[in-house]
Image (tube, rainbow, N blue to C red; front, side):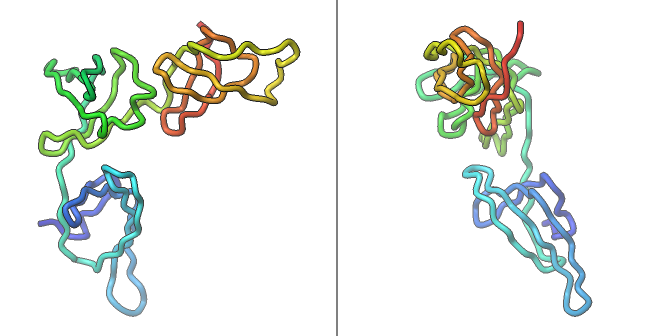
Length: 187
């Protein structure tokens, strides 16, 4: 069993049956009283963030999380099929685990999947992806400034706000964390 001395950024802890990722930690030794460890933890499944304090030397349970590279192949019912890039094994990840990442995934895209005891926990996508606009209203003449935005649908079916001058068929860069338009991509 590990102690608080083993806490590092990126370590996954099991607390009350749930997995929590250590985002920040700080060992504190006040002038009076015992030392303690202050942590900021993020729930691996829900994304909820909490602050938690441990006494120095307290026992904690560290979980082994394996992060591997996979290639997204296709959707099968309400599951997503991925292929391991090393041994070509295929796994099906449930839609609940994939979550909003489905809005930014195209076939043959590389993703990192975090696994714990053979169970997929979450997906890590690249910071941004290039997607093609499949539908947007045409911009009016004179709407060439960056002042306004309009809705656009990209090839994954995701809808986002883009500048007025963009047209259907334009390739754009999209932030996978926030879903925001980052810029136009020239071929």
